[in-house]
Image (cartoon, rainbow, N blue to C red):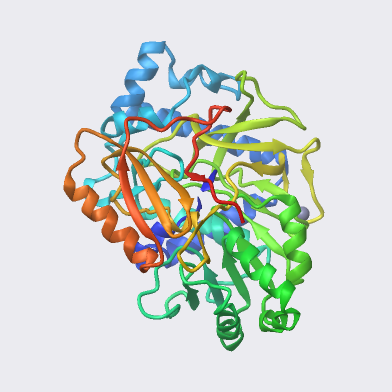
Length: 449
Ligand SMILES: [Zn+2]
């Protein structure tokens, strides 16, 4: 999954001026108001947005104009939610091959920012966003964090994929973030990490579930270290699957509530978590369908794949996009005391936070390696493989444009993250087989620990 990014580190490279300012606050307040409206009212908004997005895509992209014309679908004929099923599903393959035709001609070129989804979905995918898309994405993220009490500027300790150049931590003044390297986290220095967090006294933690697991196991063993987290009021997780069982275990050890979040770089679908621990749909972000393997709408108690139509990316419209991520639907809709009324998700299925083992025996989260730079642009598929501690094989299926320069870039960026703890070997392969369930594996880990 995933979940991949959830929301991912790529956004840290975007200028901060994109994120703040009046436009941001207007958006935030608008989405906040809608978040607590009735389900019916929110569905009306979704229908308006679906019609807007389909008309917009038809008017401004060659891809959708051709697609709808070929099928004889007029944007005006989309009148209710069942009508949207007339539009064929959009796959990653299609986006990879037709991106140029999918970009909206309503957006001036210089406003387009190229981003990539990283490799965790198997197929690294490039797309475009704009400053407005980034502002909207951030508004939904902060709205979700507001449910745990977060306010802009609150001190946060971050244990995600950011590379720290010197030492194991750095301070980001703009965000008020203490950034801790997850590449250097070892049994022998976890106490230093915890001491550093204690000094910083953050109100919140942001971390991958796999990193929380490492901290939790350590704290379980050396109970007294828990006091280092006494300032922390909430923990925000994303980018990896957090299972309900794992949430209970982690909350029991940390004695701090965890707020999970699902999103992706394509901006198709956003699930947040309410203070009562229920997943909710950010209905103003995207319209979501959950389809079973047979292509039917999943009902409560069934697993369905998230097929989403984004309301927030006007640069590249994503309509009925197959995310590859699956959820188990709750049997009952969410009608929570917190005032949020949506369909409800019981759990997000998919890739757990998996890790690679270094020469020193410590683990590096595979999610952290999920690069959002352009290093995988010329690859068709990638997969990490490990059967020996300290040695990692990166299997690559090349696209025709791939050259030695790509290999150099990949080595340079990944070795910077590994910091000589891992011997990286690149191997070119013709294909990467899927699992027996037809799923793609980002990491083929043969070691047991
Ligand atoms: Zn609630």
